[in-house]
Length: 418
Image 1 (cartoon, rainbow, N blue to C red):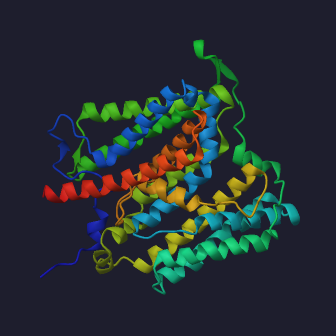
Image 2: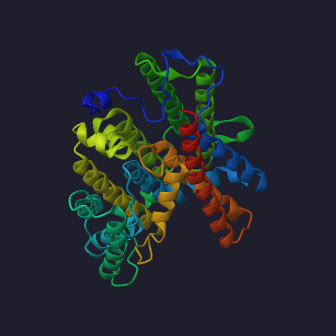
Image 3: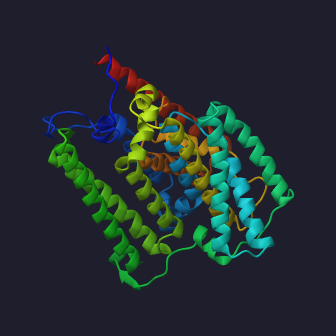
C-alpha cells in the first residue's frame, strides 16, 4: 500500500537540482552535474565564439550595455514563464499581453495625462486581471493552458488594436524612458583603471556588493545542504565556482561602468531575479510550484492547493508581462499595434534553453535568465558579423532543439543508470 507524502516532505526537500547524497563534501574530486552546469558552459562557449568572430566587439562596453537593454523585456517575461513551465503549463499569450498593456499605459500617460507612477500601477493591475482571467479558465475550469493562452494571444492582440485605434501612441514621459533606456547617475565620480581608462566608482561598488551577496548566499546554501545530509561540492570546486561567477560579475560591471554606468533595467532585473530566486528556493509557495509540476497527484495528496498555485502563477505572468510591456514601449517611446510579436516564443525558448524540463518540475530563474542571454548574444553577435535574418532564426531554432534534446537525453540516461 502506498503512503501519501506529507507537507513535511516538502518542508525538508532539497533545493531543485541539488544532488542528493551523504552529509558533507562529495568523495569525488570533481562533481559536475551537466544538466545544471551545461547551460553555463554553453553560454561561456557562445560568448567566446562570438568574441572571436567579432574581433572583441561583442564585449565592448557599449555593446554589453546594448545586449542588456535590448533583451530586458524578454528576460522579464522569462522569469514568469519559467514558473509556469515548472508547474507543467505554457503561456502563448504573453506577447499579446505585452502589447495590450503597453497600449493601456500609453493611453493613460499620453492621452489622459495620468501621472506615470499611477499609470504604471494601473497597467500592472490590468496585467494581473488578464492573468487572473486566464488562470481561472486553466485552474478552476480545467481548460488546458495551451488552448486558453492561444485564445488569449488572439483576444489581447485584438484588444491592442481597439485600444490604440490601429495607430501608434507616444511619446512617453521622461521617467518611463529613463527606466527603459536610462542609466544610473555618477554619484561618486570616476576612478582610474589604468589601461582601461576611467570607470564610475558607484557602479564598481555595486559590483563589489553583488559579489559579496553571491558569496554569502552560496555559502549559506552549501551549509544548509550539508546540514540536511545532502551532498555538496568539494571545497576546491565550490571555491572555483564562486571565483568564476564573481569574476564574471566584476568584469561585466566594470565594462558597464566604463560606458554610461548601470542601466536602470539591469537594476530592475537584478531585483526581480533575487526576489524570484528567493521565492522558488525559500518560500513555501515556490516549493509548491515544483511539487505541482513534479508530481501533481502527490502534491494534491500532500495538501497543496493545486488550483490556487496554478491560478496565481498566471496572475504573476500577467503582471510581469505588463511590466515588460511598459519597458518595451518606453524603449521605443511609443506603443504600437505590432509590439510583442513573437515575444512568447523568445520567453519560452529562454526557459527551455535555461534548463526547464518539458514535463515540468525542473528549472531555475537564473537558468531562464541565462537562456535569454544566450538568445540575446546570438542575436547581437550574428548582427555584428552581418549574418542574414534567416541564418539567425536557423541558429536560434537549432539551439532550442539542442537544449530540449539534451534534457530528454539526460533524463533517459539518468533512468537507465538506476
